[in-house]
Figure (cartoon, rainbow, N blue to C red):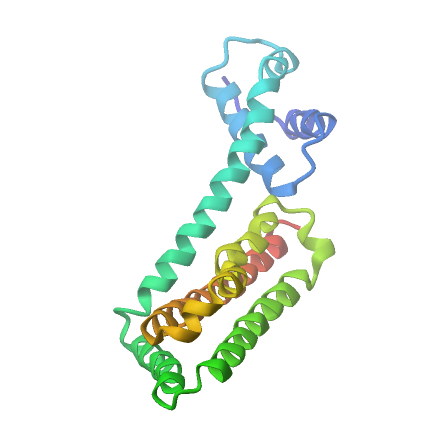
Length: 209
């Protein structure tokens, strides 16, 4: 079958809008997918008939894509965290963070360390929130931007659980060291991934506008 004309491509885009597919990136991907399938495999003569058979696929596609993006960001977070243990230039920061946490134990200032490190983690989360919220209006148009907040979801749990296990943290130096060492690393990793993905998304948005 011949390639679809510009008018037929616009019909697909209009069909997606009528199904309330609001994200630009989702519509672009679906338009390309549907156009290619119709050109190569469709048994239908009329594009309209073909599209009507794809309503459920289109709705499922958006939901599955959202989940896929979310988990891809979580994998990026864990990958970034792991880099602190083998990338040479990050090993220095790894050691520095460990020494900072250990320093509070060494000088027997666990209470001061508890407050200081929690404030540091809180600050990292506030920076992440502020960076994500900047240009919020533009990001509302892209599905790939929606799960950016979730990158900091796992790291922020260290703030919550620190209060629940406050007593053992202040009484057991080894728990203090392990908990806050990992907590700082994963929060810094989360912020790094968020900033990097936001930059990528901004460049992508400029390209498709």
